[in-house]
Length: 143
Image 1 (spheres, rainbow, N blue to C red):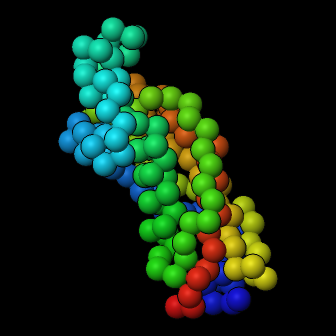
Image 2: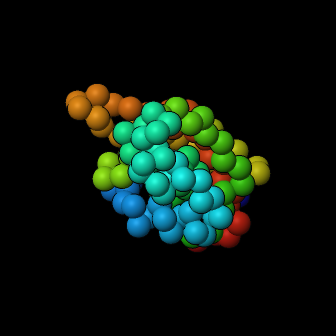
């Protein structure tokens, strides 16, 4: 397979994808995914267990990471595998930025492996809700 895979290079940096996390986003995610844990929806509950307020679902944050990769990859490539290590919460109103770099390319199988991350800035310090993620994409159609 050439084309899309052949146009990629190990070490290539993905453009960052940013978004501000809102309570509406998290409520919609909770409804769609069926995860209505009060930690994500009820500020009083979240504070009672030691958080400053409600937090976004880890999978919501991972979904944003996957969106950064698929936006870079474009149509014709699908996610074959995704992994993430969740390291820090994400609060409402925070801007998360996702990005990554190409780790490996296999032209025979049409796969590209991307090391990924999600970062948020808090008080001048970078926090890494996802520091070590990885996405494997497979080319399913030439473009």
